[in-house]
Image 1: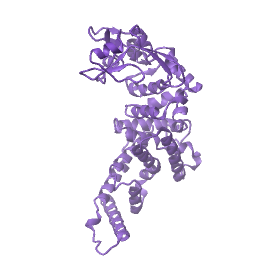
Image 2: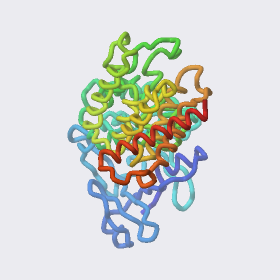
Image 3: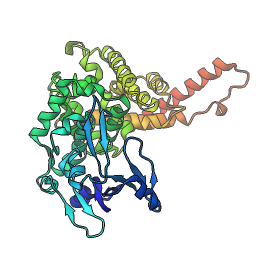
Image 4: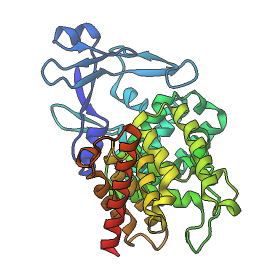
Amino acid sequence: MKIYLVGGAVRDALLGLPAGDRDWVVVGADQAQMQAQGFRPVGKDFPVFLHPRSAEEYALARTERKSGRGYRGFVVDADPSVTLEEDLLRRDFTINAIARDENTGELFDPYNGARDLQARVLRHVGPAFVEDPVRVLRAARFMARLAPLGFTLAPDTASLMRQMAVSGELDSLVPERVWQELQRALTYAQPSAFLRTLHQTDALRVILPEIDALYGIPQRAEFHPEVDTGIHQEMVSDMIAHLAPGDALVGFAALCHDLGKALTPPEEWPRHVMHEQRGVTSLQSLCERLKVPHEYRQLAMLACREHLNVHRLPELRDRSVHALLVRCDAFRRPERIAQLALVCEADKRGRLGSEQEAYPQGEALKLLHAAALAINARDLAVEGMQGPQIGQALTNARVAAIAAVRNTRA
């Protein structure tokens, strides 16, 4: 029995990145031997065990044979005769198919993953790549993580991904897995690479058609020098990753803020209410299909509906500012205002030439919200008033607080 460290831990060590979870593969053993040494079985689809002391995962070396559609359509063989090279062959990318001997530290790299790490190339291991649709999502997610290090997608890997998109293999992806990979991609430094990788391989139109529809839609160059709405969306996603690193919640809201532009003719865009309403409809469809968590869809709805109102905040009347805060449920969920301000800033700065510009509307919105939030009904003279009257008095006091802040700043 021999034990090897495999996958991401080896890859990241060679890249000089911080170590994450460690995964191990065991060659030349069966389930009885593992349990005899105190390992606890946990795998459902193939033999995986938890180490008796470290609780790290140890999997028996295995091969996989395609038996049906989708990522579950495999027959697994974990016989003790399976070699390390055979086990590594079933992995997705060469940079993940490197093993290190537990005792000697020697590297085993039969598919030249170290060479691809040095060349900064994400490449599939073998032709079996096309058998698992999740690998298309993983390729895009890895690009979101590794593109800042200079990685590119190998042309032959892109070709296989395009083949999978055309063949219908991606139709078997379950919503939960799509959401999981998207959510993780939004925590990385360059989520645009996730979108671009899928778009350029024709996979985005299958996985996220609402986002794919933004590509190719022209915008007025005086407001959007990048012109293409899809390119703007890529820039917005990267900007929010810069403003709020690792925050998938605001990242998703930023991703969805402009969905209405795919459903509204450009000549109607000045009538922003129309494309906001259509954007909300498109967002609802996306969220239902991917089973997006409630908190994510609520913030995304606010961003879709309100981002243009925040942009023109100086033009809004005091009472309209208060109405915006109410629509955001900002008096019960005060954190939403800072989140919405971030998304709006990313939208404004996610344009060619605007990356370094200030966004005063964001700070102004937070100041006006803080002033209104400081007003409570218990601090008002409401003796003898009924419920609706108290509510109106509270609204009037909050509007007055908003006006006072604006007069001070004027």
